[in-house]
Image (cartoon, rainbow, N blue to C red):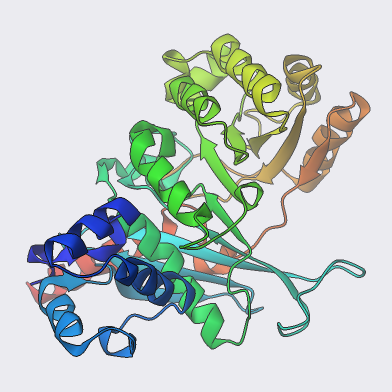
Amino acid sequence: MSEKRIDLLSLDTNELTGLLTRWNEPVYRVKQMENWLYHELVDDFDAMSNLPLPLRARLQEQTTIGTLKSVAVRDSADGLTHKALFQMSDGQTVETVLMRYLDAPGSPQDTADPPAIARRTVCISTQVGCPVGCPFCETGQAGFVRNLTLGEIVGQVLFFARAQKRAGYATPLTNIVIMGMGEPFMKFNVTWRAIKAFTDPARFGMGARRITVSTSGYTEGIYALIEKGSQVNLAVSLHAPDDALRDRLVPVNRKHPLRELIKACRDYVRATHRRVTFEYALMDGINDSPAQASAVAQLLSGLLCHVNLIPLNPTSESPYQRTPMARVQEFERVLRASNIPTTLRVEKGIEIAAGCGQLRQQVNKQRISELQLAL
């Protein structure tokens, strides 16, 4: 039934206005509905108490508030990381992760919120699978199926926003990172519509600087972001300091080599005055030597940037393994000595398959096993 209904989450303000205008509803209903959906976070038309009953009945009959169905949820032992697997109307599945971070002493805290938790960041997906095909990534190895709709992207955020509101947070989510399954810049217009929904005061109303979009190196997407004049943060999956290795680890490099990618990043910094974050997954014996650290430093020299080192979260089918901590620390030391701002990512949710695509793969394998047993 939901396939035949209009997904309200896939409509921007103009489209929602058009729908209600066709229904001969006054324009102010748009603001009322957006408040219920994105501020009150309701998922039930009956809760929209200031809408007339005939309109609520029509909405119930002809529309839906999202199409995602939660089919698996995993919580980390420390209670700070939560991963959800959603099934969509066509049966495909996609992952989303909520990461909660403990408050650091002296950091600002919303006094209306429960103590201790300072940031609540949701990591969302933009595609079912991923076409980039990085060999160390579970999602990349699973292949590409399709792009997500605006409603499917927004629905991931709403799921965890509602959960955090029920937990008592006055500000349910503080940050959004678009770096789950998929390459966000492959369908830039949909990603941008999602960003507009996140920043629109009538909808989520989140500051642009609290949103990060990550790319594997699609330079046309970086330039499209520059054209928008947005203050959204840019992250780039680097993973190698030279084209020969990056061609293997991040295959999009064959189309957009490092020289082109770094130029686009420098142009982004010049246009926005915002730093670029480079994600670097360290793999044992592959990209983690001191010489490679020096090459990374040389590549990024003079660029307003930050390197986020990530000890690889090994996947079930990949031969790549994580770098021993001593070598991780040496890699970090070389970068810092070269005046490259560097941090080591705090590992969260390893025991719940929080790495990109891992829960989806686990559930798919379980379903296959159950089907084989049934046969």
